[in-house]
Length: 273
Image (cartoon, rainbow, N blue to C red; front, side, top):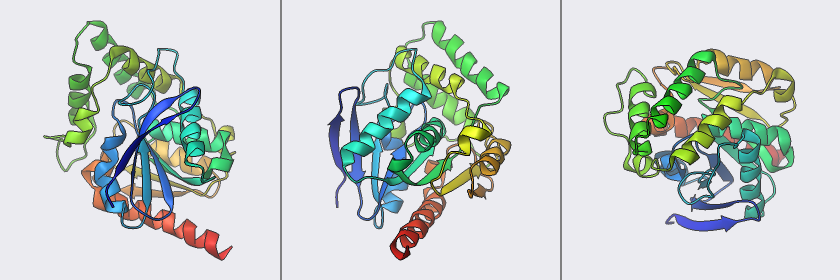
């Protein structure tokens, strides 16, 4: 089965989605500065048994533009509109980094749309060091440099990989969907900076939740993952050794095995209930 790319439009949001595979539906929510195709390596691993639906967040690729007032709540409402457009009711949801912020907010806001939740390389709130990195990127952009995509590529190479080595060559699909405007990227940075979910809000998440974390992630540390694990009732935590922040395309076979196992566990649980 070949991937299908189509446009989904709602009154508030238009985006492009990429569907591939057969089986239970998994909606994939991408991180900041990259589009739906950043998931391609993982989707290829999952497609034989999982129907994967990836979409561009507001401000990226084929989606509506973002402005500097963008919030995680806005992005969670966008994700909800995509799921509603699929017409299947509750689906499995996974998010990475910024996409994890969106996914956890979605699960708290709209539990009726989330049958299981996976949070990859993410946090309930960023620590001050990571916020300062975002502020540094903002200052670089204020210098008026035109190549936003180039900055994102270099940022990922420098900060996102684990000890298996820096990402000498990012996957082509990641790079091609990293090029978007300064305004859109500032919207993402502002949404990231404003993200803050405390234990009380996280405790409202009722979907079965898997948290994965790279042992060498310097953007969303293990302590962030452990806080999520303590705060989300019944959640499970898997730590990937020697992995950095972008292990979903550094190590798609390992990440895919973990992701598929989680989904199938909850498909089987639903079938036997």
